[in-house]
Length: 155
Image (cartoon, rainbow, N blue to C red; front, side):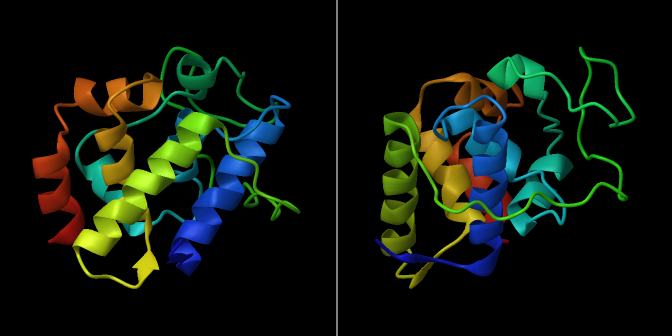
């Protein structure tokens, strides 16, 4: 597997934090939520510019952490307040089969672009190429497909 860059390592740590809150392995929705943990990755900023505002409860069934201010449960919870500390790095990353498939598709994208590091942009393409699950449906609901995602992410 290609080495994740610093931004993707942060996204994976945030995704593991999201999954740990539910006592489960990282699933595709956790990967999408990880893109929106501060500091936002370039891919997270690109998705926000396209109107994506993931809702934790709708994607994973997990409630918003207590103490977080902002949106009602049926609205977006991202971005969290600036004062919210980023999640601590987990000891290990544990992937579900779906998340492993998404990362394999992300690596395929990186290799096709002849890049030596895996980035959050490749992860977004992997989520779209996966073509199933809540994360994919949220992106498609915003009319994001592989073609316009590449334009937004690699511009």
